[in-house]
Length: 239
Image (cartoon, rainbow, N blue to C red; front, side, top):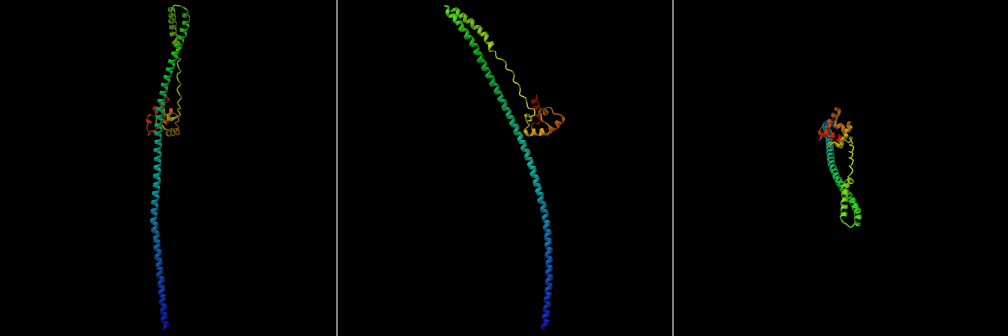
């Protein structure tokens, strides 16, 4: 009896162990399938997120590039406007200085001519009066002395203007204009002049009287302020 009971218990233990192994195998399979599904789901979620991040990064770079280009363009326009304003202010101050120098020179020349005239009329009259006074002092009568003084003073007054005549000044030679300096045209700043030179426009004459090809090149600057008056300003400079 004891042997039969022991054999039954061993058989039952084996059966339980077999069922346990079978169940554990099924659990491992279920867990493996669940992990695979989790990995696939994670991949499916990560891929759109990665694409979205890439698109956002590209959009950010594109917008930053456009912003920098717009900023550079605005800064260049501001510098050109500032340069043109400074040039206009500088030209105005130069004209004021020139007019003040001209008026000062005229006043100085007028003062020197008046002084020279006074000296030239005073010296001959004094010398002739002295020469006439010496023989008059020896004579007893005063009337001949006065007559000689009057006679000597009249020729002195006539001769004075001939000596005091000032020589006419030679007209000043106009300064040569540097026609290669495109910034002399109002509204053309250094940056614009550099672009024009890069396009083959290196003289103010080309702006004043452009050819058909040069007109096409100049049209690229038509959006700039004061473009319509460039040709007239260039013609003034060329003369």
